[in-house]
Structures are given as structure tokens and as C-alpha cells.
Length: 189
Image 1: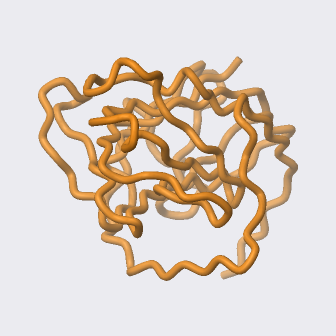
Image 2: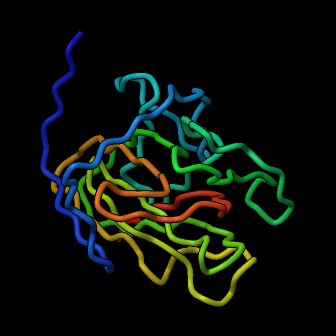
């Protein structure tokens, strides 16, 4: 079965996204597939398996990172994390992926992060193949914080399924490892 998705998405970000991929190659191991879990939201029956749907009437959509497809991101216990669990970005090959169908609208995305130091705080969120470098404020270091310092903002002109990938590096610029990530939240304006 071939699924053809049409639609346009326009992206902007408070930080400048990395767009160069000159000569970069990456090798990923097969991800360990986990069931995606959100707060009260389920995939629509007309969507391919694994695609979550941002409800058209919702203002916020939160996805726990530990329930995404994970590669080299162990799930850790943390009493202060949402639902008591998070993931750790341990390796250069760490990866979390999920697909979400967004209704038309303008959105802001933030990740809840716990960085152990200022040299272990920057990472990338990809919307489809476009990377956005995100990181928390300095300070606080060592506490859970939403990445409000560099929010990701984007607009979807009509309903569109977007692949969301979280990893330490982009093809153009190296990020960091060592931080814990709890959830990503999308807020519709």
C-alpha cells in the first residue's frame, strides 16, 4: 500500500535551524519500537499505525519521550519527571522518533530537559528533516526545565503528518549527550 501525503508546512524558529548537510553521513541501528503514549490522545483509526493525531480542538499535545521509538536512549526513573520516567541521551547515536498528524495552525514546541552541565545540554529536534537546536537556560542546571530559551515555532497550512526526531546532533553541527529528556509538548496558538 502506498500512502501519499500532501500539504504544506511552513517552519520558523527562535533559533536558526541548521540546514547544511555537506558530507555528513550517519549510521543508525534499528530502533527498539515502543508504544507511543500521550496524555489522553490516541491514533485516529484512519491513520497508519504509529501515527498520533493532535486533536483539532486541543490547544496542547504532550508526548512522553520514553514512549517514542528509541535507539540508544535508555528509559530512566526520575521522581520529578512526568510520570516518573524520562530518557537519557547517552550516545552520539541516541534517537527518539514519532509521527504526529497536525491540523492546520501555528504551533510552539518545547522539550522538558534536565541537563547535568552546560556542556551537556544542547540537542536537536527535527520536524521532518529540518533540525532545530534547543537547550535550556543556564542556570538552572540539574533541574527539569522546558526549553523556553529557544522555542520551536512552526505553521501548518493544512493537516499534515510530521516525523518528529530528537537526537544529539544535526548533519551540520554537533550537539551534546548526557542530558535527560522527559516529554515534548506542542501548543497550538
